[in-house]
Image: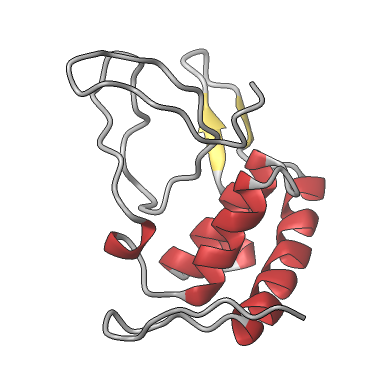
Length: 136
């Protein structure tokens, strides 16, 4: 704690960090705790400014993970709100339940609107462009 999200880990050391994430590839199997995870830049997964803004909001703790996941699959994978609302968990005993709650989907709709507004304000830069800091 107190590092502002930064930490130092020597190359020969192993560490554990807890990171709140969303899946950007609908249909992939759930990762398991023992599955190695590769940390890569977000730009290697998406060129959609709205998805980048969504991930920033999640990283800052401004939105909950479940609603962020709904929004991510809508923005990144083009899933409709109806498809997301119909998504189910099918239990071994045959019981089915909604994958996302109505409230999570409603929050996701709001998140998408905010992400689109933020994306218009902060368009993605092409790799050759320099980002400059502006003091208001």
